[in-house]
Length: 50
Image (tube, rainbow, N blue to C red; front, side, top):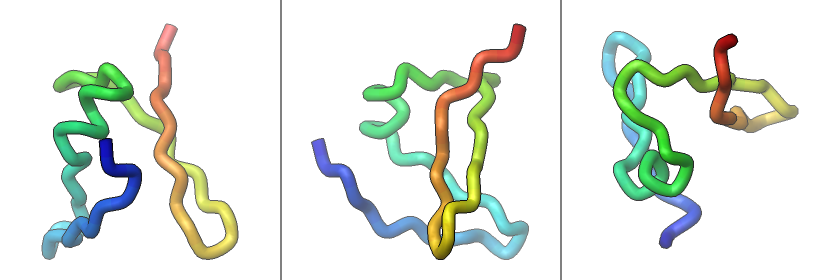
């Protein structure tokens, strides 16, 4: 699995998480992720809503 990929931001400001990343994190349509700003990078984490 590749741990780095180039992703284009759409005009609406959205990005798509690559399929292999979603599969590795077991993310499916409707799941939530948390985005954390850390210096000059964004960290995307799998989130659980209870």
